[in-house]
Length: 326
Image (cartoon, rainbow, N blue to C red; front, side, top):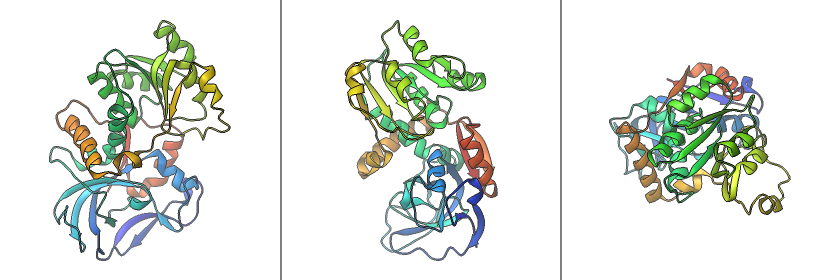
């Protein structure tokens, strides 16, 4: 029997329940997987609270790493005994478990140099960082980026990658501890938004010009600040809605604020092609295996403590990546 986290209704963290389930044998295109660690992502809270509608009851979590125990019919790219990691969306729901059946297609072979805990902490965040740094913008040395949530899991990876590319990173954080963490991972200037005006500080730091690109994972609370921080014809990358969705957007704002560009990318569209997924995974795993990018695991929770993990995520008490240890 496997220990799983399941919800029977949407709502707050308290709807997550610890249950036991018979895993069974893998069907065609599936594998049976024993997790070594499971990733926690802010997107998990959207499934839980109903922002992302799913059939109920259902499992929780979309990212994990572990060992393949058994493969089903038609599975050829992995075999029993392989170390793998995965991330996805609805097709991988059910990661909050110590053992599970999962579709084989999302599985990525894990380099020996990367542990299960590191993989669970970085697969979604690492692939997200990879497409942000390699597909969204044609970077030049000296470009400047404003990075919201700079001490979060994606933020710390992006900051280190930006440093490798010779970029200047201005990061926003909520306290001095997070500011120190961000600077230690490549953020050039940390702005504490709890007592500093972000757009004003950005203009001061860029001699009035503004930044070339904004990576905004916060959404509603930072949207106008992000637009006000860009240079003319700069790029606004809306990559998350941690504070809520952006309502009633008028495209004329982009013209009024300097003929700005805006995009709302989704990881699924950058890993749908197996060749592109392999290329992005190869880049981020290569950087991590070589020590050029460090993955910070700020919080570890037992599987049974998923409720507290969600409370901490939503209260923005976390730094770096969070994982469930199984």
